[in-house]
Length: 193
Image (tube, rainbow, N blue to C red; front, side, top):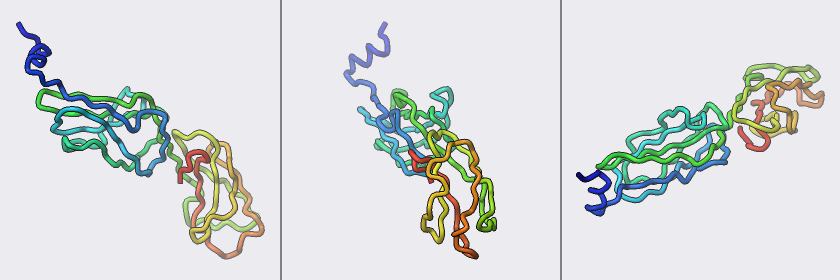
């Protein structure tokens, strides 16, 4: 009797193959960033599915399914939650079945969310307040910076430890009765905003 692989060899048509090329390990990106998921392939595919794991491949969630078989990349707006154990899987479907590939190594999605101040606060010059944030997939210092009418002001702290909070005394030389549009915190090496 013939085995399926013997039949394939007799016909002379190899099964299609695919290889994930981006992200393939070591990349760092922030939630909300525009990134490319890319793969190379041989043969003819009818469609593709893209999945993400945030735990090194132990479980998977679908990013997109039903992509046409002539695609070889997909633009992706990076979503949270953050993790340093992310991998991408691309599954290719063809007339004889399916094949897949996974990022060779983990990549990182960093997520940083400012929780206080979160808008509407009125802090007087000379007063002291807690600046707080949550983070995941982030390493290194946190840059805390106020913005006035969209323009960056002097840093509150150029590289605060990622402890989730920082106590800040509003400088006496800050302009009185002016609304600072927002306070941003971002990871100094990732530049997450």
